[in-house]
Image (cartoon, rainbow, N blue to C red; front, side, top):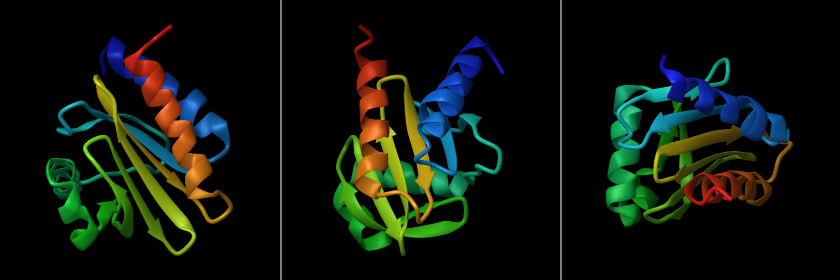
Length: 131
């Protein structure tokens, strides 16, 4: 755990979990090779990381395969080279790529995917272009 991981952990704790929108969140390395920081209970397997790599590489394929994180499979509702959103019932997953990392956040049934996604998208915009 380097200095970078401590900074990412701060983002997980304050910006993602602190928003009240999410029950689990993590920050992945920019190349999706591993987890840099996460909330308690957030897990992602090597196979799931590969699935995210494939989804970002070919966003259209994500609509067919769905998005799997933490052993849960989500139906893809948005996929492009920056953002992947998935739904499973009323739960959802939001994955957004920044220049230096990839944010992953899971929301429970009490949150709206659109509101949850806005939190992550705004955080990525901030990381990409700090004031």
